[in-house]
Length: 74
Image (tube, rainbow, N blue to C red; front, side, top):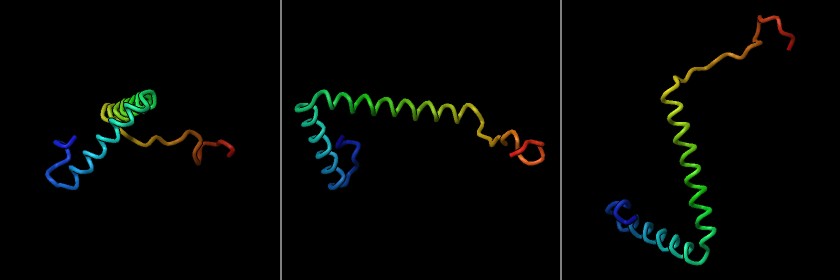
């Protein structure tokens, strides 16, 4: 984590504190840590799937059926 934190002392300290907290959580509450990891992974997959969908299918606004002039009573 510290390597990705950059060169600033503050960012390295934050990364070290986060790593320490994650280690403590995994040791004291392994089931909660696993649940959090799975939830994060599931969210990551959902976001990635949405990104792929947006890149594959062109984004365009589709007008709703039944707008003005369609004869539908609204």
